[in-house]
Every structure is written in C-alpha cells, then in structure tokens.
Amino acid sequence: MTATLKLDAFLPYRLSVASNRVSGTIAGAYHARFGLRIPEWRLVTVLAEFGSMSQQALCGRTQMDKVTVSRAAISLHERGLVTRTPNPDDQRSHLLDLSPEGWALYRQIAPQALEFERRIFASLSDAEQEQLRKMLERVEAAAAAISPGF
Image 1 (cartoon, rainbow, N blue to C red):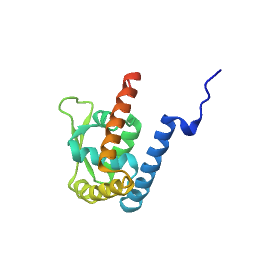
Image 2: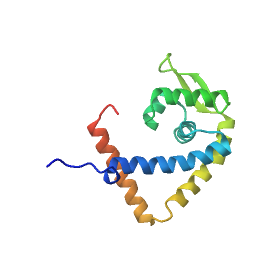
Image 3: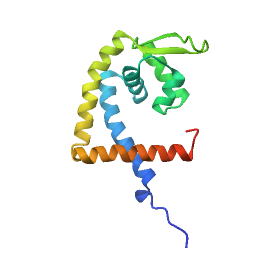
Image 4: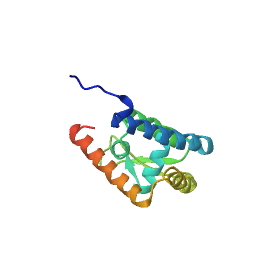
C-alpha cells in the first residue's frame, strides 16, 4: 500500500502556512505604517542587530536569495535608510549599514515587532515558547543537513 500524503497533516506544509500567516500579518502592518515589505524589514533588523555587512552576508543571515536581498537593499538605499561603502575585503561588493534615518526607523519598528510577537504567541506559556524555539532550531538544522547548499 502506498502512503497517502494529506497536505493538512504534512508538517512542512503546516510550517509554511503558519510562517506565511505570521509574516503576512506583520508585513501588512509594516507596509501600512512604514512602507516596508518583508525583505526590507528583515534587512533593517539584521543590520541593526549585527552591523555592517555585504549583501552576500545578508543572504546567508536572512536565508533570502540574492535577487530579493538586492532589490530590498536598493529600495532601502534609495529611501536613505541604508548607506553603501566599498568592502575592503572584496572590491566587487559593498557593505551596507543603517543610516541615521534607518536607525530612527528601526527604533520605531522594534517595539512594534516585539508587541506583535507577544500578541501572536500569547496563547503559549513562556516554557512552550522556549520549547518551540528549540524545536524550530532543530528543524532548521535538519533541513540544512539534508540540503547543505540551502
């Protein structure tokens, strides 16, 4: 007998649906309030947390493809939210960093992001949230082991 795939019970599908629902909810608010799409918001947040980095490093950190990161970086640069400086380690690339305007935007976004997280996960206890974080880390590691180039 062949195994039957039931999409609603397929964990990768459920994970994708949950991720899309959460991201979509947050993205709608960020777009309405700040004019940011998800990739732009992620770049702002990563640059705030980790500092100056190349687009290639941003691809690795965000797990977004080169085209998505490039478009987001261009948009943020055009809006004056990020600066670009030559990369001393690789003359073919630039380092991106938040401008003063980008930092001001981040200081507005960060508290709202934390409030969204609190509201979305309010039905889970602190212990359940920590358990979920750990399980997601294990799922990400298992996926990376199956597809090393991911």
